[in-house]
Every structure is written in structure tokens, then in C-alpha cells.
Amino acid sequence: MTTTVHRRHLTLEVQSTDRYLELPFEVDGAESIEVTLTYDTGATVVDLGCQDPHRWRGWSGGARSRFVIGPTEATPGYLPGELPDGRWAVVLGLHRIPADGVDVTVTVTIPASAGVEPGPPDPAPPTGPRGSGRRLPAPAGLTWFAGDFHAHTVHSDGDQSIAELAARATARGLDFLAVTDHNTTSHHPHLPAVGAAYDLALLPGQEVTTHRGHANAFGDIGFVDFRRPAHTWVTEVADRGGLLSLNHPIETDCAWLHPLPELPPALELWHIGWFRDLRATGAWALWQLWRQDAVLLGGSDFHNASLGYPPGTPTTWVAAEDRSPEAILAAAAAGRTAITRFPGPGEPALLRLGADLVAFEADGTVLVDIEGRRRTVLGDRQTFAAGAGPGGAGQGPYRLEAADGTLLAISP
Image (cartoon, rainbow, N blue to C red; front, side, top):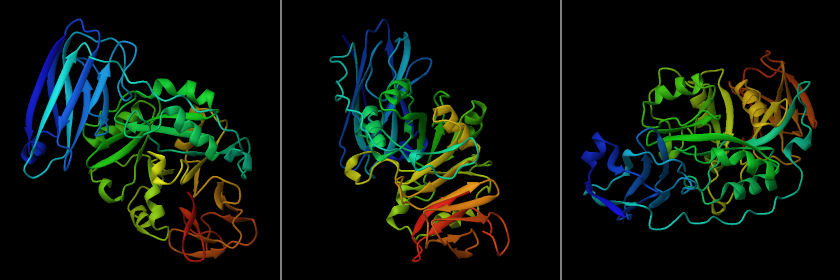
């Protein structure tokens, strides 16, 4: 057994010049690798990750202080597989450092002193109706599928296994769910089997996460390096055939602050944070400055049940040819989305059907265009001409509100 120990005193000055600190260690014929991180966590958050000589091996952010990587298994958030000889590095993200600094110790043990902790048993697949069973009015050949484009598991800072998350999404009535763990793709290989077991389309995603903003990269496109300038994410994801969305751009301590010469094609306009006040108008102010052809997405940012809401809060609907992950992502990229508070029957929805808007199960709600013009919805289903003058719906994106201004639904 060999042990490598790094001790550092981290300060704000270190953080300002090297936010991602690499601590090297050598691997030569290793059977497994164990890394532990210790520091006083009272006022400090130090993120934890790892790279081998050739590729990124994983990230757990501030959620873990120990990980193990071996040929056939690894701590969630990290990639198992061959352990190539050469110089590896523990990567520390200096997320929150106190004014007087903090002492950290990183210990690398080869081989690992213990294996990967076993996960919980998979829950039984729930049964019940799905959002697609509502048969929302859709263009010919398409179906509106209910889902969520933002959720986390134990592969980053969530407390649910992929199976536990899938069970919650199925019980909620979702047809699909994007799993978007922070700065890792370690969950991607597990998604097809879990999705099949729970009859749920699980979309591969990753939340590219920095202290100046987060973005979801959707698709099985490989790791997107969060340490590179944010403008490179836009081109890299597009070049690899994925879809990039800026997340919660006006949300408290994780709003979008990176300057971008080119905005990505999608925007998480309705994040769970909007539920704190569904009459708030900050997102609409942001929209006035945004690219007008952006794909509109919603995300629950689900991490754990203790937060008091399930996946699908809000619910993003996608009009797709079928429920496969590939079809859902292709339809989203084409802009065929709508967002409601929840997926269930009776929840007002606003849907784009070609040149028309259909307000569904929305009697007595108010249709509002981007310029604030308001029209009362009469009946459980009413059609409006999108983009028309005073007699139509005005200019989009559009929303349904209650009489008191509470947000109910959004459509492009």
C-alpha cells in the first residue's frame, strides 16, 4: 500500500488565481484508488474531483469527502475502468473559502483500504397514469409527453439513487426525466437499464457547474469540461450534437454571470425557484434581453424529498414522435415544448399547434402575451391565433395566469 498526502492552506488569494487546484499523485499498476479530503466544514465548501492522465474521472462537488475508483466499480460520480499508469490529480474546487483561510488535507491510498459502499435496494416500479395519458391536443403524428429537464442523484449532490429518482418520477406521472448530475457523466451508462425497469425515458444530461453559472448539456455527448471558458460550452455541445440550456439564470446565489458572445439555444425559464412567488416578473424582464428563438424548458432541480416537492415541479411537455430519449431531445431542440406547474389532469396547459395556441382545461384563466396584453380564456378549450393583432394572442412567449397574476403555464 502506498499513501500520498497533500496539505494546503487555502486562502482567498489562492482562490482568486487558481479556483481549481490540482494535487498530483502517481499510479503504477494500481488495483484501486481511494481519496479522502478533510477540512473544517463550518464556513467552507471545497469541491472534490479527479482526473487521470487521459480523461476526467469524476466529480462529487461538496457532497463527498471520500471516493474510490476501481476497474469494475466506483463511487457514484466517478467512472470505473482501467487505471492507467502515470500522473493523476485530485482536483479541488475552491467554492467557499473563509477570510482567514482553511487548512485541507488530501490523502491518496493505493490500493483502496475499503471498497465502494453498497447502494440501497431498488424500489418497486410504481403504477399509475402518465402525463401523456391526458391526450393534450397535439400536431398530427405527435404526442405531448410530460417530463422534467433538471434532476440530481447520488452521482452528484442528490440523495436518491437513479432507481429511486426514476420511481419518484414514475409515481409523479412523468413520461421522461433528464438526469443532470453536476460535472460528471458517471450516471449515463446506468440510464437505459433503469429507464427500462421503470418504463421511463431517462435522458442523459450533465449540469456544467461553476460559481458563476450553471448550464445543462443534454445528450450522450461525453464530458463537457466546466473549467473551460463558458463560451466554449456553447460550441462544443452544438458540435457534438447535444442541446445546451442555461439554468436558473436569475436564481439567488447561482444566477448566470458568465459573459457570452453567443447565447445557447435553450433556456431554463421556469425553475423551481419561481414557486417562491409565482407572481414574480423577473424572468419576463430577462426574456426581453434574450434570444427570441430560445427553446423554453422547465426544471425542478430535484435533489431530495426533504425539499418538499417531487420531480416534475414544474412539468415540461414535449411534442414528440415517440417517447425515446432521442425523440424527446430532438423535439425539444426543435422548440416543441410547453411548461405547466404540474403534470396531472385538470392542470391548465397552453400548447402551440402550428400558428395557433390552445388553452386546455383552462376555463377562467388569463392569456398574457410578452407585452402584457391580457385575454380571458372561455371554456375548457379555446384556440387563439398566435402572433396575431388585437383579436389574437399577441406576441410570445405566452403564459396563462390566474386572475391574481399567479403563473400557471407557459408556451413559446
